[in-house]
Image 1: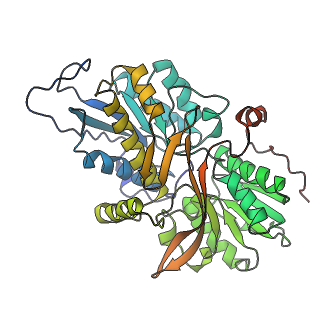
Image 2: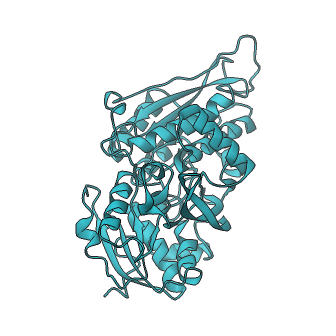
Image 3: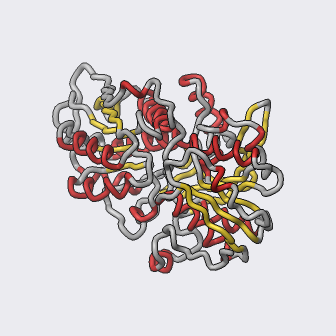
Length: 426
């Protein structure tokens, strides 16, 4: 997300899966006519890179499930050609992702690359896919690959890190009425960009970020950080995810802060990958994201039921993002009549495509290849005995530049550990 995942220490199944290659394809019997596509039986090859071992392994399962669910729904074929999905485990590292991308492109000759979770993977892969001229659909959310360092080969139908944070910072100040907020985030690019996007709009709307705490990705105990939170803050904004979110929420309650200082968070803090494992400690937390399983639309209700029936899991951002990504890829291939060998035409089809009825709502692309979509402000509530992220406000058609003119926004530095500076830190 994006973020890394919840699966810290959750690798029972993945431990033996150092590298998995799953080929899916329905080979059609009989003559097929495919203009410019070569042999009728030649499959469309898609390389799916996900985390099956390492800290993001739990999220990696949702990534794989969501992608494959759509491929199977279309019978593993498109425009008369079979689809072969080759899955590789990036082991939760940018180096692993780049190594597997090279294998998929140079040995397997894939026509499209998809997947990759951690924010640091996008900058690692973007130069490579540009050099190799391979369309790349990432999940990783690093802002700059669709801002100051775009490439025509990267199409992000998911989200940029700071994208949900821009409306949320304004919401926290103007609607929730908070004036003084402390932040605590994981100390890497995704954390910096989440905090940066929130801080920019929160302060422009009249609020003050009075403290910024950073926890390394090796953190197992949040007590040293929670003990530093200023007790006179109106709220705490948190960017933790997966297993980190489970630990933080429990320790926050143990410190007696639950109910005293409200919790705000990045979307992954209260995503469906962690909510089933949480309890009352997370009730009332407010977070923004472009998806929630509680979204009450016919498309999402059908999708959420299908995920639950097929995989026994609650639909999450990760499964929805990859389901919609697979649909985008398939419909783009249809638009070129299956001729994936014509990369310029395929890229053009991908970039002009839009989906009006995905489970998360309408999705289009801006001119730099990043999704424009609804952002939902969600509050964690208990419904029918289960924790859900219920929508309390919708911001429609949010771009990665929010309300700012694109050229003006791109003149500022990319969000980092030190930008925006903490002008009101005490």
